[in-house]
Image (cartoon, rainbow, N blue to C red; front, side, top):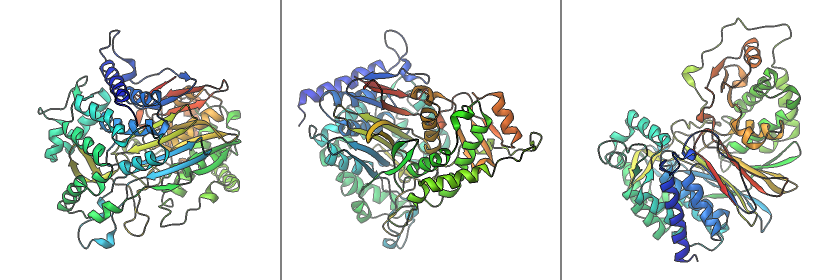
Length: 565
């Protein structure tokens, strides 16, 4: 059990960072709270990459005090429920890929929200309810893979302190909160309105957003465990509120929720072993399928896709094929068979590559003067696999500890029911598809935790919030095919491909004229996303260097930070 002095050190570290993160440090504004390049970090023992400085430092303090990667991860998620409140939900979804050094095994836990059972309800709409899995999932992981140095309540203490003191409002947070207000989400729910606008307006940038109701809620979770949200008082409030709005969920539905342990999706690429999020998450299958097709092309010989129209078109068409084929087929494997082995086989990859080659422009044809579709009305794809994630955010954390344990995980806001805000917890539901019958009623989300191994041991772990499968594939290609440093690989232009390229490509503007001309010649419409667009993801990457040291890098598109020693 962790001593009280250790807890004091954790809280002190969080408080010190929170003060520095106001942007009013002695040497001027803190660059870590801005978009833009962040330094690469090197360490001998541990490494943490998350979306905010205050979160990374809280996780690092756990590692310094003898906790392991799972202890640090659980602490970081609760901290993000306060400090990245605009991106994630305490009653949301979560999936984790991990490596346990003691047993030399790769593991996966899916704690994604699930729909209630329709056969239990003769009135009300079960399809609008998603029973959140994050807290139950964190409890399960801590029980199985935690170091044993921390009691459950200790994981929540930094988050409780942060909610009491108030999270720093960054421009990023304020922008999203303002958008929620403009959409009317905040003004419709009295409790939400009080939480967001206690003084009649949103908390300004640079000031602290105190959440007393959320702090009290976190204290109850610390005291009673996950049961408080599934069989206890909060669960009763949620069931009552949801049913009053015409939805359908019961205390039995809540009590029966459980996370699922599974083997990661495994595939190979260029001689490396990959471990990714398994179905019902779409990410492992889609990234693997993309790469199995691309493995049949000499991308490096063609030149980087930001400079080579041929390379970009091949990637667009590969991504389009995989997206079309998997979009409605990836479902909950507790209900449906999944052809995962087929999708990730060498033979199927070759078939996909043959398909891509045979959809290219005929020799001698030039479509430069043809009409191309206007894509500006539908920027960014819906979540891969059919999940609409445009209205909800997420966080991705990657952590490595001194024992050689690795964790790559994403948690998100998909959970609850429309209009629900209880005790400081935003639980406003999800539009992601999911069955409401059978044992497999989990949401289908594009979660994409990835660990890459060399000779059986973890070499690189990564992930991003948002709709990750295509962006993650692009960064992996940059690292593995083009030999780019991971920091440069994350910063390189990213793009969204649609339906085999037939609708076009949305891409950051840092591409060559040759690429623009090549796309136009092939009739592929380009939508310019600007130099850096945060909707294309925010990579967190940790890898083991040839020097035997850990290295970490974070994306310039958001506010992530890497720390380690």
